[in-house]
Length: 113
Length: 114
Image 1 (cartoon, helix red, strand yellow):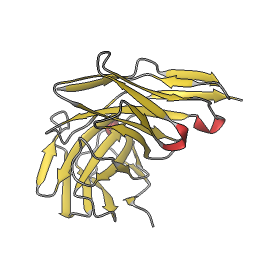
Image 2 (cartoon, rainbow over the protein chains, first blue to last red):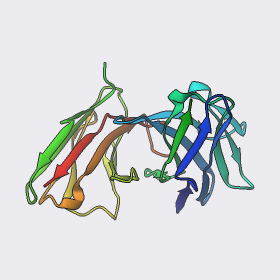
Image 3 (spheres, rainbow over the protein chains, first blue to last red):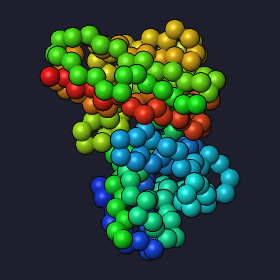
């Protein structure tokens, strides 16, 4: 079984400030973790993923995420937020042998000018 | 060139009707998916189709049936449409499997059932 939780429905941050979007997961075996972004009226776009290796993963548009096995977390971060980062962010988890990934409920990121 | 395309973009229909949504990917991927995103933006996977194997999500009513004429196409047919079927449906594809590969999403089809 696998599940993922995004505890915040919405995150507000001022432009230029660092941002964090939280994600925790539960999976039997090794997790495969993803972040996707959805802009209004668009499909999801891939940001980054953790499969194995370095716990700090760098992705598109200056985003990064840190895999923390002990806390079962994969929080998305960016050092300096842009207004254009405002979107809906989804965390997803998969596991070996499963063709069906599980997505979180999504977190709406709002970056204020 | 569009990697994953869906038609139509908008679909408005009456309860009880049967409708289809088409999806095509030109990425040469082996696996395709259908997702449903409801009005609260919750995203739920409905089906995954990997070459010869269809993976069915048990929570999906059997009124929904995916059909794959070839590896590049995965269509979604919906029988006896209900009000609760109103949502945005996304098609996606990935190179091989779902658990390690990046998924590429289509632009979505907004279905409204009246």
